[in-house]
Image (cartoon, rainbow, N blue to C red; front, side, top):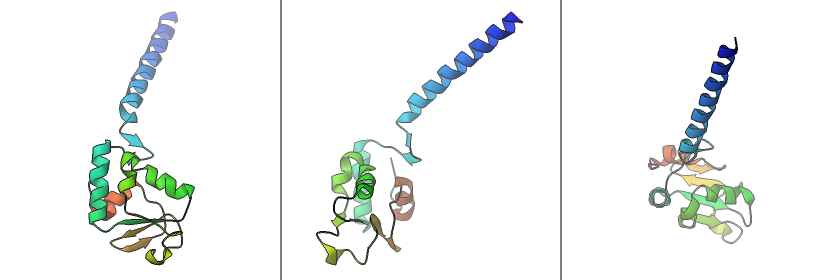
Length: 125
């Protein structure tokens, strides 16, 4: 019986180590269901969004908009962004922030990188 207990403890230990290694390896790959890519590719992704006419609308100092921009990491300054507090006439009827201008009109919501990729056809990574 003692041998089975030791084998069980060792098996659980090995499983825990394997899970930890998987988490470490995947940490850079997935966050909140969004694919994480290196900074250079974020820039390529944002440039593609800009070329396709995607625009992020925000309003002043808004935490939800800040969270949306932070998805783009170092490329967040490249996002085609309009602050509707400063430039209301350019906001095309957006009244909920963040909102995205897409090929299909205004989406009154923040969007995941995966959803932006799907809507735009721009590739992540």
